[in-house]
Length: 84
Length: 140
Image (cartoon, rainbow over all chains, first blue to last red; front, side, top):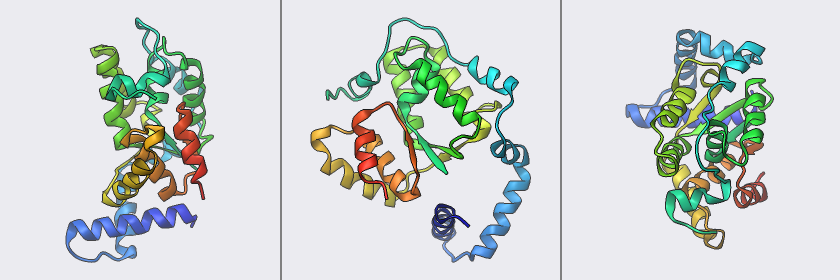
């Protein structure tokens, strides 16, 4: 198991333990994650493979044309009134 | 490999007139091709994205497009993972936020830095130079 995945699993275990008010073992947690994986099989499988050309075209159809030109540098001004 | 996606990348992708739209398209294409492994969108970025769209454009169609892109049935939504910012992340984020007053980071930026550290994520997909500098300076 990769370090980042082990870390994420530990965090998940701690959070589920906190929310349930009782300690959950990693074995129990992994069992539930497998159940969730089965329920979300399509999403799980989709994440593992590169998108097809048709899938990429689908996502590339999301952007909309608009009015004024915007810039990254202005995000904090536009949202928070901050100036860098 | 894991990557975190910043607000500006999602906005620039969705809004063609943005100065970085072409770069954002490239990033989204790379996410779809699984070049970054797992791509995470922190909850704080979701909140900031919708606030940004409303503040800048007031365009209901763009808000709907953003919602559909992130939460609809499409190949992009199927390849990203959402990431909550719990109390531990907020504590770390506040330290970054407090230390980076001169850089004028937003608290969302500070959360991204804290999440990047916490996940040991290699990549922060951002167009924000100051954020990129701070995040890479803290990488393990």
